[in-house]
Image 1 (cartoon, rainbow, N blue to C red):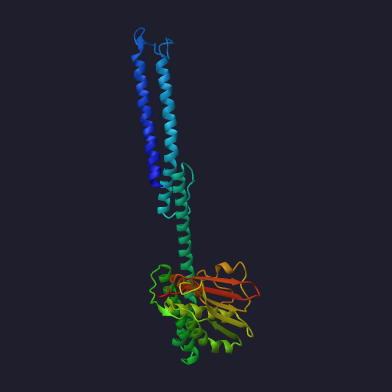
Image 2: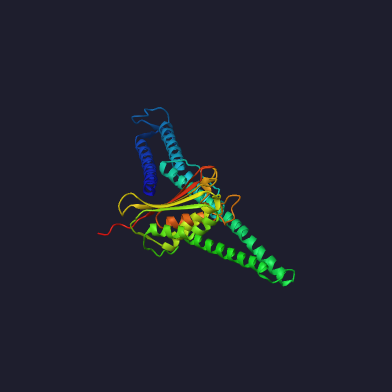
Length: 353
């Protein structure tokens, strides 16, 4: 693209040079075929100007030169004006005006440049907006546990509360919540930056899913929820077992949170694509209230949570980043009153030769 643009500019300069050379050559040719009729009054007698007056040849050449200069100037301006607009807009973006856009006009190469600039500015604007939102959301999430800790400690120190387990327990619980939130933010930042360390090894995903489901069995029984597990015999997958376990735990915790007593949660692990070079699918399906269509596209967004959620709103975001760090995908299907299914696909290890 850049070379095409440079070739276009070079061709324009060559045309201007050839036109200038031709105009002066024509002027010289007519000058050689002119005779002088009195002091300072040339009269042409060449093939195009047979004695039409003293200034015929000069006026003709002057008109040609003016037309050529205007045409070349318009063509040059058509190329350079959009580039100048992009340069000016780039300066404004450098000063923090990320809503700056330029008109996509001019030759195709210049239009492509303007289009790329607008896309870059749009991404910068979105990133800046996300940064501001993240700062506000983190501040909001940190404020609540800190307020609880501060209020209880002040009450204990001032003698308002007795120093017993009933008043020290909430302080410990909120400090754990604060530590978990900070760890979630750290994990999310590393995952989004692509620098999250993964300790991969060959793991049977079926066994991992059964193990995680077993750890939630007592919680499901206490809530009166049936927890059903189906796991196929899968080839080993090269994953970080701790990170994928964290993903499955997060999905099961969400399912338990939104499934009422008497409901059912189904967890399954199965192979897809055929053979060891295919992929494995882990799905968690609950019979809860479901998710509305306007909320469903946002459930993997940072700090997005329903009105009755008590979490930080980072669990599904972290799960999405952890799955994508393994080269997999995560998706959700839901409808009001019909429950929710979250599906994770992960690549399996290639077959050994």
